[in-house]
Amino acid sequence: MLGIQMANPRARIAKAKAGAKRHEPGKKLYINQLVHGGQDFFAKYPGKAVTSSDGASSARWEALQHPQRFLSPEALAAHLDYTKSELINRPGIGLSELSGALMNFNDMLVQGASAKVFHPELSARWSAIWESLNLQSACEVLNDHDYPTADRSSAKIKASVKSICKLGQTLREHWNDWASVFGFMACGTLDLTWLLTLGSLTCAGVWAERMDQVPMAAGDAKATLMNDKQSGLSLIAFLVAEAHAVHGVRLCPDTPAPAASAVFVPVKFDSDDDQVTEQPATSKQTLLEEKRDYLWQTVVPRTKRQEKIRQFYDAFVSEVEAFYAEVNEFGAQDAIAASSLVMPEFRAHVKRIKREAKHKLGDDC
Image (tube, rainbow, N blue to C red; front, side, top):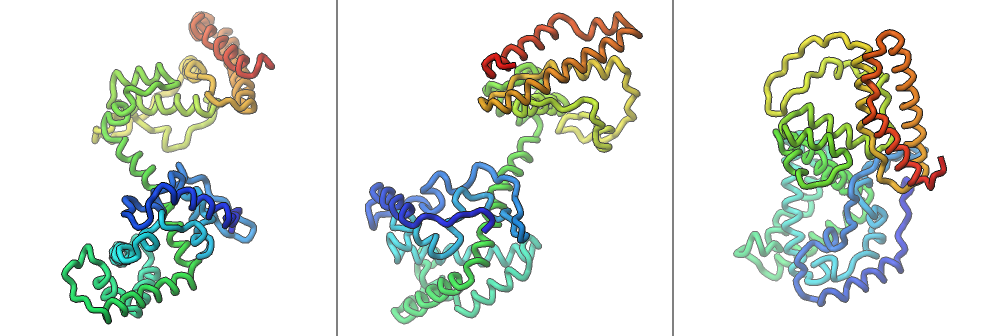
């Protein structure tokens, strides 16, 4: 399954037993231990999916730290004990909570298909199972939380439990199908927390306000942003500087920008002014100033990886030398303007960056 290794059952059981000591059997589980009991259930962020030679994609599993737990019924069973689920710890309560989850899952799929979020075929497949096993009635009988006064009898409870167990058997027999649904939904959940976070941070001034007390590598760019927290231009400049600090290798200023950005006019995020003005021609001096400013924003990456520092150092030195060469060429046309491009403060910055990088490399430059 695309680079996913099966779990070691003995290791999983040993880990489960170690966790079991922290919970008294039969006492209430205050959180969903299967999901929340381990801090490593979700990955911090999904990585780029990879595709195997047979065309299988890892996209559905990228949200999980340990996707191997869900590759088969046996793999997940090796991870379960009474600290992980009320179905084991307190089965009667577990059946009630499971019934509530099933009813919500059913409503979500039906409504999701109606809203064209889910494919109708997925909803149809689930609805066929739901109706054939009479799960609506079974869930109402077993769900004590939402239906505390439901008409219950021993016969109804027995029939409802049998329906739930048949559902479990159906899921086990079609494990790959429903585990894939789980994987995709987990990835959607994790991916969308990043996407919605991004969306919320574009509210006017919010991004700047939330990071006011956070130390940043691009201190000068941050200070500029803090002077006008609602400025889209300042925010973009700050984020560009932070990205440069992380990656360590500068983007080449000569690289032509995409057509869309060529007509971009920075505006405040709360502005509805979407007019695009024609951009004036850029002079040679302005282009050189932009290149200088790119270099001036450079900070040595925080990483300790030698190859990353080496890559940064070589790229930085190469770009500085190329910049100086262009300034000298421009100086033949306008010596005064060229001299203003390489003031002492800029040269000092270049020397400091080289010195810091050499220090991280053990002076091996």
